[in-house]
Amino acid sequence: MAANLPEEVGKEAVLVKGWWRANKWLLLRRTSQLLVIAIFLTGPLLGEGYWIAKGNLTSSLTFDVLPLTDPYVLLQSFFAGHEIISQALIGAVIVTVFYFFVGGRVFCSWVCPVNLVTDAADGLRRRYNIKGGARFSRDLRYWMLLMTLIVALVTGTIAWEFINPVSILHRSIIFGFGYAGLVILAIFIFDLLLSRQGWCGHLCPVGAFYSLLGRISFIRVSAPNREDCDDCMDCFMVCPEKQVIKPALKGADKGIGPVIMDMNCTNCGRCIDVCAKDVFKFSNRFKNDTLLNVSKKEEVAP
Image (cartoon, rainbow, N blue to C red; front, side, top):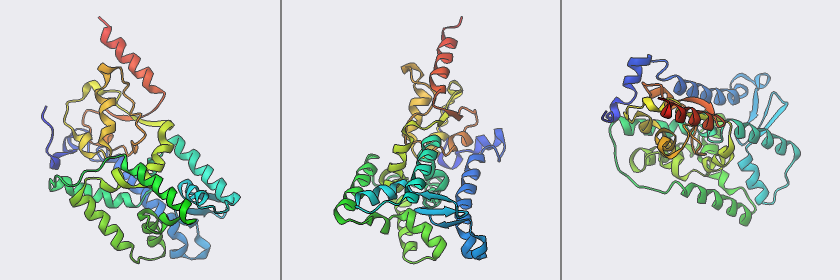
């Protein structure tokens, strides 16, 4: 079967599964992202007595009890030589354990507000079939991550947070926009015209850091029904990290299990949405060998 045109991606899934199932994980992600923003806005909008989470994605206190700290920011603070207070350390441990379990890049697809911007740019690229643009190594984000830590070490400041689009956008939503609008507009134009998923998929050191947390995460996307794949390519078209799909989807003859083990999978679930054949579903990393063995037994069965 020939690959679908960009403007046709997901249409077959809507016809076969219905609109809700063909967009379920996308809608849940958007709900999660907006809910995170809303939680931080309760105080500024409703008054002091209605605070749910005080602070921002860098550091917050929920219900005046639960501390949450971005471990990446805490790591920068450590390299900068800042004193690490116990509450910040506890908050970072809580966040780290959470993302170790669900997958580090879940931050990018389910929490990060910049994802709303880059997904919008990617959707327009597909709708208007915008091709080409600059190409960057996906490893560049890890060099960016290293650079931010070196800068912190040399300057004694968490300098990256002054220009980090994630922090800038989230703070601006809560406390009011300033130059953040220009930063976000630049990322939108960059992703739309210059490089598909250029920021999140190639440059962002925040995503690089959280991908490292996801190396051994429990929750994974799997392709247990990969034999039903008709090569429509819809999953590749919508995946922000499309290189993670092929080994799990097409690696049966190489002894590769159907669970996506790549640490850069964002667990966004979009491949599950747009697949009319229900090839994909959420699973866990320990299903890989089990599903692979089942597949091998089916192949040798008379």
